[in-house]
Image (cartoon, rainbow, N blue to C red):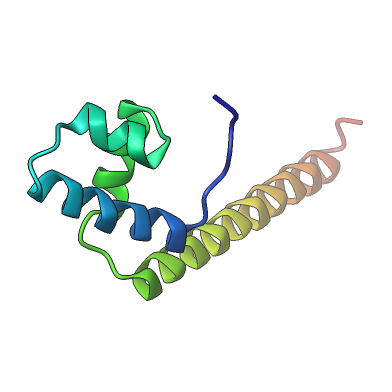
Amino acid sequence: MKRKRHNPEQIIRKLRQAEQLLNQGQTVADVCRALEVSAPTYHRWQQLYGGMKSSEAKRLKELEHENTQLKRLLANAELDKAMFKELAEGNF
């Protein structure tokens, strides 16, 4: 199966489709085949995006991206602080 990345809107759309198929009496394996995803992917999506609206999922992705940027900035600040501390001690 070809690897494909789905954006949050596509995931939520597929989860809604999966819910409809499950309500029609299909098994999870059949639903996964219809959605063209593996069972672990379906369950992971269900954990992350189950019950969400597409706007909420988009906001979640934005917050995750912002959090990553802030962590990177903090790491750089800590490196600068350690560098200045080492220079102040004269251990160069």
